[in-house]
Image (cartoon, rainbow, N blue to C red; front, side):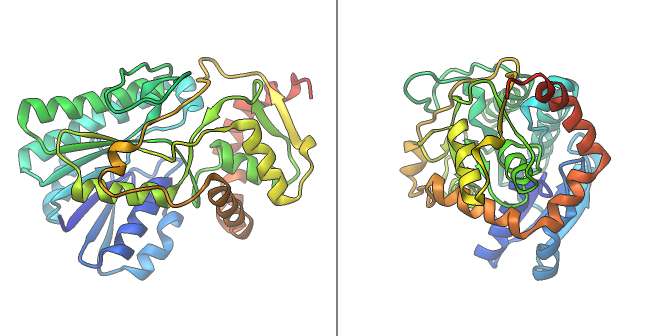
Length: 344
């Protein structure tokens, strides 16, 4: 495994993974393949292009484009695909589910076919703990049944099942990781933590869904990237590995912590109408990945502190996004009526 194709590598986790792999493994080369949708941003890779010019390349393309996928794999002598390419936001999946099915299911099929045809060394699917649905008691291990409650989680589960079927039917060397919520640099600010951080910086309301008691396992993105590297190197084909901290935090406590770090008043928290099908709790068992020698390095408090400070110090990155028409249209559609009708 020396030449990696990182699909969706201009997005949040994909760009952090690309940077991590190039820094940690000087024998690797990485080709980022990204459609550059609203959440794909070459600014996420600006330093990578400068620091690793001889070992990094970028191709703009759609993973549903079978011809371009195959040509890219051949041109760059790729032996491993790590698939981050996905439509990812639950809120957005409620608005436009068709894009989620296309990218997360059809796109996964196209990549798997290319791996099968060309005999690549490994295909890794980056998935989500949301495929388990809400876990009200205990923790979901990798054998837990799938119980999807949004078009996003359903499309990701579909991609996972395709991967497992290609391993069973065609002996394609697939591995899957299901990660908990990631936080850190370069996360598109429609996601809850960068949304709350950047709103708080500007003294804008933090629109908190429902009672704010939803439980999430927030992990630092570089811990996740390290877990992915461990699975690529030590994981068994055909296997699934959960990646997370095994510690849950209530969303209202997360919001309060952000305001405390920034020295902002708690009154900025504004409860709003909950979204449909909002899962109350995600909780995963990470012992299987721990047995390979991995563990999360950051506590939630440490991860949040680093994340908040990054957004404070990098307004050059997020202000153009938040002031853009695409983001403004989404924000108004998602929150305008909720904020107007809130009890705060």
